[in-house]
Length: 290
Image (cartoon, rainbow, N blue to C red; front, side):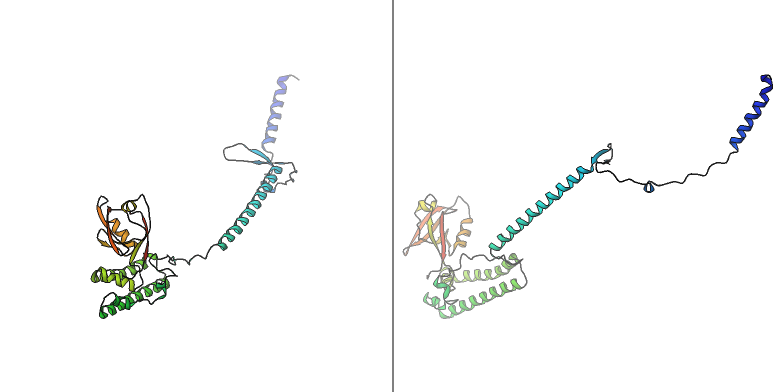
């Protein structure tokens, strides 16, 4: 049989094969399995983990290295805890050795430089020595008036301090309230004059003399001749009763001024002319009978 006779048979067989392929039924779709359902095998002890960081290639870290790092971190943390405990014990011991601190918002107690010392006889006498006013030449009516004035102010000061503790005032609030009483006393000082106010301070047991206790030899007071034991009475014609008066007097005027300093020495009154400013002396405020 020639090839030309076989061609129709070959074409017919090809058509049958193509039809068989096209008409064959499709297999059912395979079930999808999530990664979580895939079986996992335990990693061997020397297995490595892959760590990924954004924008970088994966790097491997042995599990053994991670365990070592964890053990070192735990050991370091425990050592730090021991150090903290030791410091806490030392702090507790230091606090126990310190004096008790004042309660919160309680005004701190500040020593009054004008208060008489505990061993000073003035600290044990009456609050107000009315007889000393009479001895200073003040008449009985004025002496009684000054005593009542003093007792009124003292009672108001005690009341204000008690109120400040009860109502938890700040130091500034207490100072403002007490300043009102100080202003009343300053008005009384101006009314009395220097001599009577001097006697009033002594009767109240308050400082009325500023005594020089030491002199800096190279300072102007030492060069002028002011000596230990001198009582400073006036500075630039202002009466001086205590160190506050001297501080206020020195801070006034111009530093180029020449002023007179009046002192009492062995019953005599001396005058020294100095430049305004620090004298270079140490002083003590005392209560001395005029």
